[in-house]
Length: 230
Image 1 (cartoon, one colour):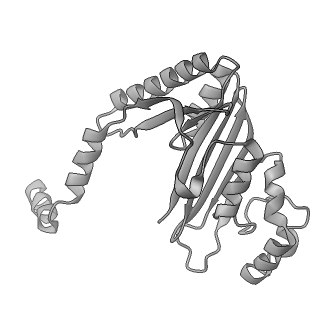
Image 2: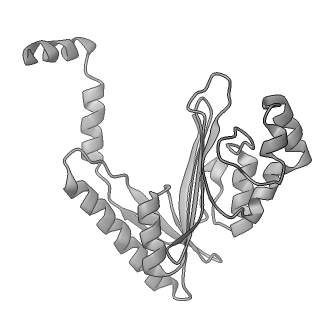
């Protein structure tokens, strides 16, 4: 299964101060989440600046509440993208401007055998990159995939909640988002340009390893534990 996931924060003219403040916010968020409960897991985050780019990249899609906080505190644009594109199709896109949510999109089929997912979240105004989802070539594909939906779903060239088209879990869509915002990212290669500055925000690897060990236990130990609990 392929997963493409990243977040981006537009730096102020003083890139260094934006980088330091962003890293602080991410460190505090991870530390607070880990301290809140022994069962909470936090993922390691790699934060980068790149030559010739106004964007600071984070090598994971971060949750909307944290993305909103970052955008509000730094008074800037923050974007998060997360895509899964094989057996389970999921697409999540969030953009905040100075702490204000301007676009939120969620699409998922969760392994639907008919391959027809649904737009569950469509908030804010359409963005220019979305126009490519309604090209004549794509609409012809949608007619084969969901002939009963195309006329209404694509009538005005805007994504609508509750429909299975347009589809977005593909490299072309990601490439168009990257092009539209000039993001320093090659999503299909999970690659970023060479970093001019980088910081690794610690996660909770020991907790994750413990969880994986628990899941790898022989099946008979599960029933043994259930018997001991009776």
